[in-house]
Length: 77
Image (cartoon, rainbow, N blue to C red; front, side, top):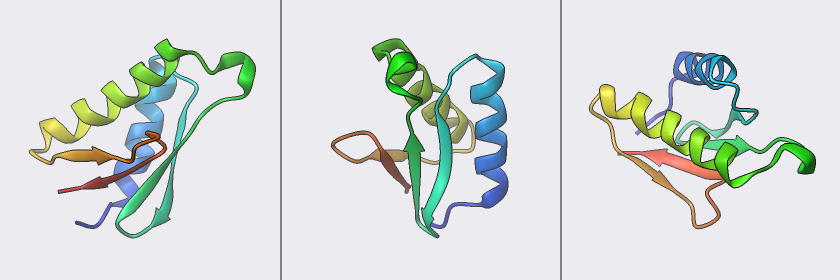
């Protein structure tokens, strides 16, 4: 399933509003990349918050998110 650019904009806004310092970008039309903040801000809580925001966002749209083993990439189905 393709990832809409508008969804990435909305996800990044939501991450920023919640104080989560991760950023979502395109890898290609079906895969997005979850970019962690610098080492000083990369905490388990930040990572869990970012994953939660992404999953909740797409769950509301009826779309399932699958993350890579390192949680840095995701696809939709």
